Length: 218
Image (cartoon, rainbow, N blue to C red; front, top):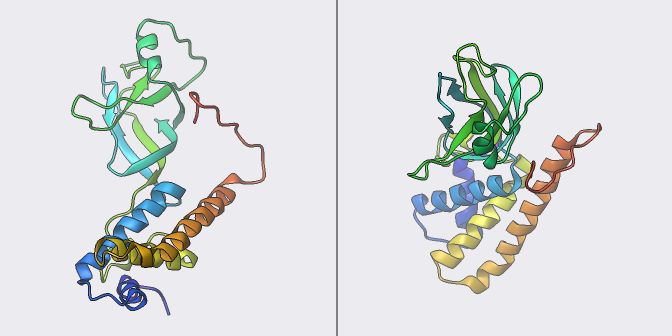
């Protein structure tokens, strides 16, 4: 039998012996699934960030992005840069060979998350105007909803981890019993660690691996 959001809600209520309303259980399941996705980067999507415009360096990032693994502008891969590359590039201190450029995070004055491109798109320039900006990224899932089972995005063999997390959260916040929540919290933490390892192994492949260097690509 396929797992549904409704069965997850019932599992949490039965395991915890809760008399909590469905909305409270769904809130706990949603927040735990989001935490699992954020910590393991297991939920990934291809995103359309926008289209380059002349003289525009910054572009709004779709909500819920946890990490960008690859960014393409007009089908050309842009490497992950440093924020200071924007200022240094404006001074002509950065040399880029071949096609492409670099991107970096550059939030605006309101705190909205944006990505900035270098070189800045110009007509006939290295970064052309009207090119599609596409990202492959780890993202946050939508709220879980009864009757919309596509909102379950974690692997099926980790649903027990999700329910353990929701039970733990409800015991601490709804029942006020952190002592009873401890075992479920440990099961939840162990499951997240296992899912992170499984995700990394799945995406690693058998070929050469890129070394992650802090301040450069990590």
